[in-house]
Image 1 (cartoon, rainbow, N blue to C red):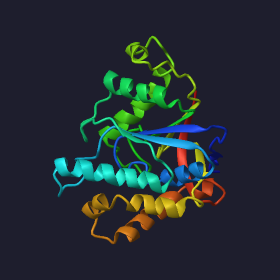
Image 2: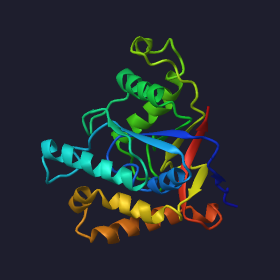
Image 3: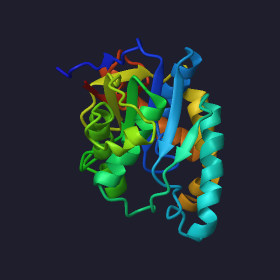
Image 4: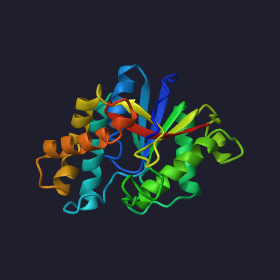
Length: 243
């Protein structure tokens, strides 16, 4: 018998989503974010890169500001108005102390109860190999949630006015191959479609298919994959790590 997914916790007010690239949140998680902002919760985005290496036919110097604009517009569709970028180089992010420090600093600034990131594991569901950027940012985010609460780790952050924040209660990993929890994607589905469509330059560089057809097909397949484990409902899934 397939283990059922639990509903995501709702007793929180602020969340920070930390991912590697523009579009990482829009390939599924945005449907949950739309539902959360509808409920009056505050969600902010932190992106490690501007996704400048993501479009083969556009030079990174032109792709970076284009993808930044697309990400800000995409976030607005689901009620997110704060989008920050760390300016790591797309495609070659390395896990390490600088990345942990930068994410911990953002957690201290935003003081979230819920931190969201993307799959940190080697593979996605179905055995598809994950990218180095996703793995590095995901792992660093899991670690930074603890770093943010310890004043003796990165003490220079206190010197910068960033007092420890030990209020992170969960880290939720989107698109994990080992999900434990889910959010009903149905209420936020149409906004998730529109949010992903804002990444038009990226999508047009990725496929010759009509963008809306591509987006709906991808989201339908992704959000329905775990419906049998969530009462038959479209599901945005997360692997939830309590703290």
